[in-house]
Image (tube, rainbow, N blue to C red; front, side):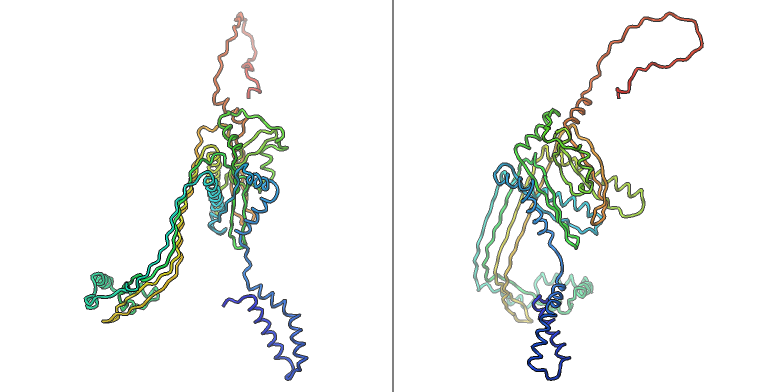
Length: 479
């Protein structure tokens, strides 16, 4: 039995009153009763309230917590600037939320966490695609039906003999022997009652309903759409919720296009120069890499714009064999590398499509039921109220970039999740304009022809003892 806080409090106070009265004088005066009541109110009311509160489960909704986290981001700092510029129509900004499908006890929880971020990103990309253009079809239907004369009936022939369907069913039951009875007993059904169940007919007598079906489709390019922030919240039961914030603008799309077509000829911006190199920026706080998903644009110590792509994967192995541990770690790194590459493909050349089909129906109905009862018929009516909803949503993103030059693996990392202890392995990839220029010079290298220097042959001399060595033809700075 579930009790409200008020009911629990009343019961506790009532029991305390009973206990105190039981040990009181047999014939207390009105004054002494009042004193007891006042004493109980002052001394035990807080205790009773504490007991009532303790009986309630202490769980915070991680979905609400992450919404508060997003609101906090949008109310201060860079988040407030994104929000303000989006409100002015200068760029596109949105967020989306997804739940990690399993709890941390699952050996692949870390990988489910990665896919939750992917789901949140897809939801955010779908919002962006739909904002650029969506096709919508919708249909609503209201129905009112009333025909009380539709009460089903059995004919005299049907009452005298079983239908063909019943004959087939009876043969099947006879052939199956006691198997059906055994299954019915396992379900808690008396086989004799089941076998005695009379056939019945049903017919709709009344219906009042309203229904609606909507189809929304959108397909657009998502090139230049970039995640700028990720969030995570969880409760004490191990339920995790993640969120992603994305931004898109014409200016950033131009930057992405410049990367593809400039062949690394991009000017540094001294005002954006960082005090640390890209590697130092990322390695200075290794634990922060656990919360990095997707791709970011950073600036190096010279002010060059750099793309940094983050990939991570969990190692599901829990045993003590090092070879197996190392093999699974390498597989985890390979998966993380694939994610880093995928981020680049989605950024440079990609499309996303979103299809949402929703239908819902509210219905009140009455069904007439005619049941065989021996040689007679019993008729009844059965009313019902239903709300039926069906949702079919599919979001697809496809990326493709050919011959991307100037990327390299910056570093790999391994860390234990600070709360649940799962081993997380990550790979960080980088695109840098200087790297692209270097890569192109290596790829397009053509050896130059050199002219041999004519030397005058020396006259032969008499042979004497001595030593010889090859000439120093190369210098250290060649490498």
